[in-house]
Image (cartoon, rainbow, N blue to C red; front, side, top):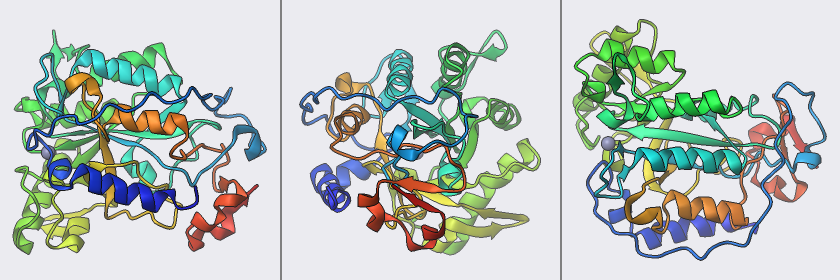
Length: 349
Ligand SMILES: [Zn+2]
């Protein structure tokens, strides 16, 4: 499967038809087109008994830190779904159950971008849960507390029941997060819950804009976050509608009034798992995501159920942590996938 990455990319993009798959945030009504064939049953990787256990032989956990990382993209959490951008709260809870059962461990986009994955227990696979648009279903309140059926509430409850799957996700905000009329509370509670706060532009505008407007959109959102929680800054960006910025450098870093901003990773919309940040094809300026939805039973091609089935079946090789921070471990046969800059920390077995 040496060339699976290239084939995967081309196939995903071609089959998804780019236009339909890449429009997001309520734009596309592309219907599920195919139901994935059920994969053969495969064994999930062994779960580490303890994240503090000493590093072990990477072969014993089949470590592969050059494998793919699914970055799941969520939009609205809502009881009545009417597009591929919607998911019921029950479906989200079931998604967490599946991810835990299949050996995943939640990390943030920023942790992937910074290669800060040493805390992922040996044998487990990082997954990133992302939420765009800061809509109400992601964070709302009941009797003054975070509502149990909001995305944040569901993750906090799930983590209480399953401490081995912490409440960790990356939220991409626009102005007036979660329609609370209170950015201080919204951003503060996200940060308190341990979530990453990311940039999705102030007005939810695709960044095909002149330089001043790109910087205004990213800087104003960053300023809102920094005002709500002093010292906090968004460090990753989800592109509105997945539209490629006309000035990619300004999507990564710039300045608006008194606010400098810097985005260490830029998230796309479609339609495949992301490379490991140690993989030679990792590109922090264009990190693909997988849409997660309960629309149509969540069975559309290239949706999260489809990709998680592919990963489970072994069609795509997933990242499996070695539990050995400061190193990157992988089977020797994948050595040509390592970015040359990390040869000095490689543990090939
Ligand atoms: Zn959006």
